[in-house]
Image 1 (spheres, rainbow, N blue to C red):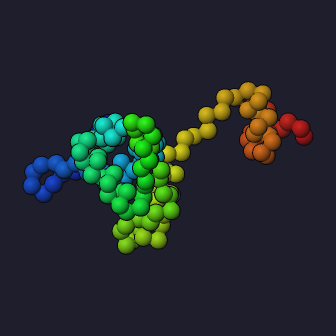
Image 2 (cartoon, rainbow, N blue to C red):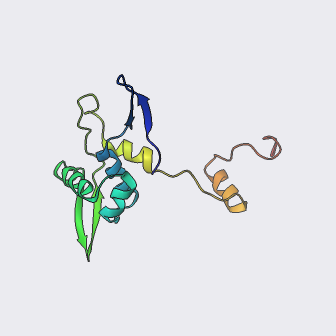
Image 3 (cartoon, rainbow, N blue to C red):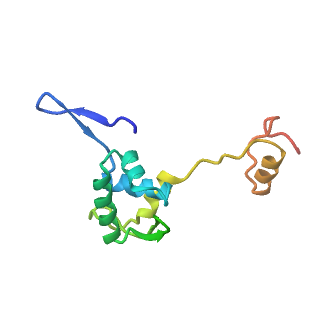
Length: 135
């Protein structure tokens, strides 16, 4: 788990805070691994397993995810069309947040196949000769 941001409080101490709530962190952890055990989700988020269970129950009751029993484990299905709960963001879907935090950068390996794929999509970018090839 990464360190949290801290800020000085008016009482001589520091406070830990993050931009996302534990509910948001649990939702993102499940989005990254829909078959994760709650123990692993709890460890990733930094909460107890019981807290993770309560958060998953909240998210399920709110329609943000559903559970399906597969053998001895749960598999979670997320609802990206669910709306944020705060009135300031109620017109936005949580799918945008999920996409922001779960998409991975393009990991294509450079080589003839990757170059052919890029040129097929008209997104070849600059060439080794500074973009002068073919002219």
